[in-house]
Image (tube, rainbow, N blue to C red):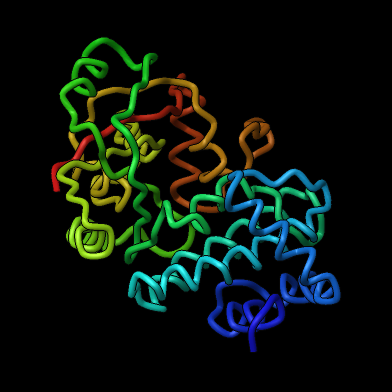
Amino acid sequence: MNGLEGITEDLLERGCISAEDARVAQKYYSREGEMRKKAQKFIADKKLTCPDLGERLAVTLCAAEIARVRYAERGISDSIFYDTMSDIGVWTADCRRTGSLVNGLDNTAWLAHHVRLELFKLGRLQFQPIKRPVILNMGLACIWKMRKLPDVCLNVHIPRGGRLDEGACKASFYAAPLFFEKYFGKKYTVCTCLSWLLYPDNKLFMKENSNILKFASMFEITGKRKFNPDAMQYIFGSKNPDFQKIVPSTSLQKSALEYYNSGGSFGLGFGIKNL
């Protein structure tokens, strides 16, 4: 079965999207031709402007079907396709969690990378070829390090879901340069990462054997910036939590809350890793 219905049922069966997502997409089956045209434009323009979040999901699913053809043309395995497109389900869940709509999809700007074959999930981590990054607010030492990077790098993203297992991450770093050389004929020798996971002061409230600290130790941390809300979103479920009302339910929440109440701050770190 092809088309919007086919890709919806396929991704549902593979666990990439939820039953709720499939029910939303089903409402647009009768408008498949329209959805496909919008998907083609979405892939070409890298943006989707329709305000209907259910329609945004249907268009993204159609774009995923188009991407699957391009995967096959390059010989990229179905397993990598499904792993990569599972991010659709991650972001529909985020849409429900944040209350934007009971069901639908908001963050299509991010998913444009997936359907344009600009980003791939290879094991635990996602990799995206980028031009040498320029980040100006992390200090002169960081800027100097960036100037020494190759013209193109692999940017690393850490998708939600699953443990940040050290062995799984190492396997992803090993697989990434082989993948891009095999399927795109390009060699990458360095990867970069900008994330709250790399913020050096995380060690002040995390356990020494934390998977997050182990992940950060794989990078040379060259810059940091205070006061970023991503850590709060991950740890407490909100980018603007009311710290006076938080009742910790995990050891990480307890130690992070004590750290914050004693004057600590959460932030971002920028790291470089040779492949």
